[in-house]
Picture 1: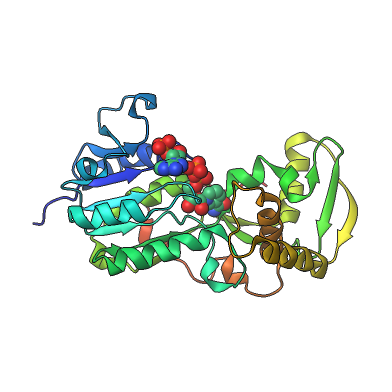
Picture 2: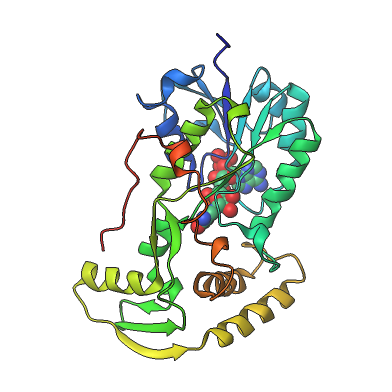
Amino acid sequence: MTDKPTVAVIGLGGNIGPHALNALTSDTFRGNYKLPIRALTRDPSKQPSNPHVEYYNSNDLETALKGVDVCVDLTGVDVDSTPTIDAAAKAGVKTFIPSDYSADHALHSWNMPMQRPLKAAEHAEKSGMKAIRLLCGAFAEYLLDQPEYWNISIKDRTYNRIEGSERKLSISFLADIGKVIASVVSIAPEKLPSTIRFYSDRMSFDDLAAYCEKKHDIKLKVVNSIPWDQIKTEAEAANAQSDGHLSLTDGSFAGFVTILKALFTSPTHRDVVDFMNNNQNDLVNPNLFNWTKVDL
Ligand SMILES: NC(=O)c1ccc[n+]([C@@H]2O[C@H](COP(=O)([O-])OP(=O)(O)OC[C@H]3O[C@@H](n4cnc5c(N)ncnc54)[C@H](OP(=O)(O)O)[C@@H]3O)[C@@H](O)[C@H]2O)c1
């Protein structure tokens, strides 16, 4: 029998960190790897104590990654993961999971900050590790809890509908992403493909409008019908303006959201955002847990 792997997770304070640690230390998964989980964060004093987790300072990668087999990167999209990958390779880490957790942005040519993990995966592979990319749907919480980003105003009771808003995209609940991470590090890496696509459910902007109407017991008025070509033109302008460096922290956030709207409603390239016909849901979740569904 081979040894159970030692698992490290870096970048805990973001969207996925708490869910990943919950799942990794849960009854379902925690017998599959060595405990404690190595949790790398810039300020370990900020983290809640957990008997199955040992916190390390992510500024001392050499100490934190010594003896680790699998390194899961959860850092923000604007963070350069090169130092982590280099330190992981030097420490003898065998498997590196880059911070993807997004749509399949390799399948279109628009500038997106999420194309960075693709390069991180290439760098990890060149450094001698197996890279496993985890691609998922749009974070469900980003859609359901922030409808104003997606042309719905609860306050004004309006829905500024984009043509194509009936098209469904994959969505992933954060708790499910945490469980998939725990599942993936439980499986021998040689049994895993280099890219894993998964999702919790599917929904469209029209579904989101219906969800908001039900949740707030209101009726939304469709105030405009935006042709998809108009969104495409706006997205192309944002793309050109970004000069290849679209970022979430330098003021190009609105452009980023516009490109997402164009991708979500696009009549073509549905496989960028919808994994219905190409996913590994059954591989990562062979009846280990129930995928969270939207209450429509
Ligand atoms: N599919 C979607 O809809 C969707 C939506 C949002 C994000 N994502 C993806 O999810 C992943 C995580 O994104 P996120 O929004 O959760 O990230 P985030 O909140 O921006 O950052 C996550 C963590 O990264 C660490 N970090 C941040 N800046 C750092 C720095 N300069 N140096 C070292 N560590 C740093 C921090 O961890 P510590 O404080 O613990 O050190 C932070 O809490 C990204 O790959 C992103 O593309 C996907």
